[in-house]
Length: 319
Image 1 (cartoon, rainbow, N blue to C red):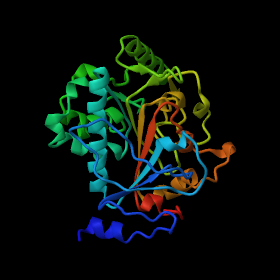
Image 2: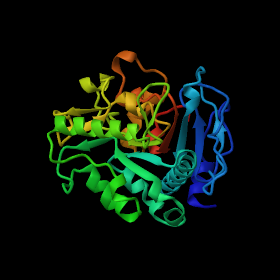
Image 3: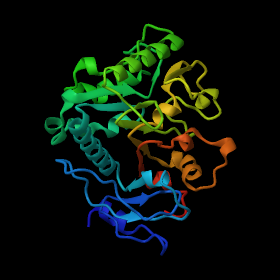
Image 4: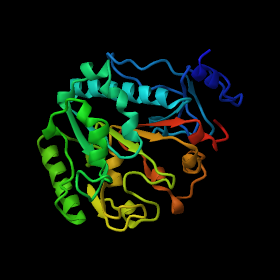
């Protein structure tokens, strides 16, 4: 028995949630409320999803919650493989449906987790010419600065795959934070007008095909931090912050209406340091008065998948 298989087989589940697990991961459908468990469906693809088991969890019901899935992996290698498969499958789906695939990146460890897309079979099989790449947030620093999310993504992923350079939409690093946010928003409106970026008929905001997000230990996503007034911005597509609690202080970021209008959101959260925020988000005990930014991720016109490891979910008693 492999290490991953042994780890998964030894996972203790309550009688109400016990189910067969795949060797490398298991899936919890609707992590906060109980619903008939179901897996993401997709049309036939060269990148079929591997078999996973589904389990219902305690709580209520609702269509919005049926759009959320929780994947737990024993090893980072398995998570990266699943994330690549998930992304490649969506790429094929949207290229077939609309002739383009709009992908939003974040910073942090997410970029390393995308590494398998730059390897066989995906490197040769994915239609990279149809990809359009954006950033959920960016630090207002030069593109070659160590803090730049653009540099991180370019060094770790984008330089290894043949996406046309004019389809990689980086922040204008010659502008102020306010100017950079306004410029990025204007470019989005132009891409919506050109038909590159879809518009959600439900929200009226841009509908990106895949939003790839990470989460900080404090529950922040993109550059939307707990307690900061910009988390309540509901008109703009892109806003800016000049007093980020995490350096560097000047940043631009997508707003929640844009994030929540995505067709698919993949949220990667790993490590014991994030277990507290995961517990607060998925335990069902939140108060609307003290929501963490990650708790405000609520797909209005799409689906959301959590890609996690065991340390990150270690405080969830029902897992």
